[in-house]
Length: 90
Image (cartoon, rainbow, N blue to C red; front, side, top):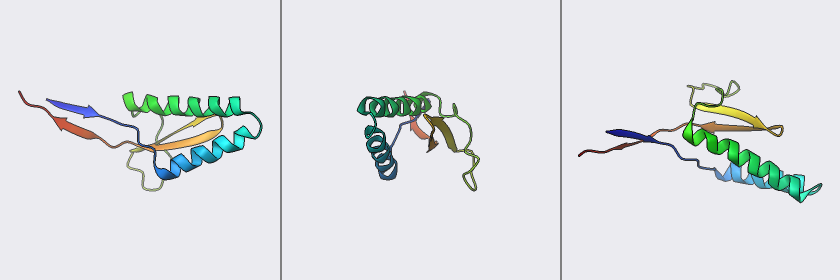
């Protein structure tokens, strides 16, 4: 039996971008900053269950369909689908 698993991995660059965004929004409202971050993370986590939920990133050059994108609170979040296959035998 083959089981396909997906996981969400935030690159260092994406972590830094999230922190920068958080600090920027915090200048006006820490509560709003927390809400925006939570909403972005929640939307990204939906891709774990259904990796093709969001559309193909049309701005990514030479995209083989594995790069997807969504927008949340005016922020553009791009991600790549990579399959991890586990083989089980009985």
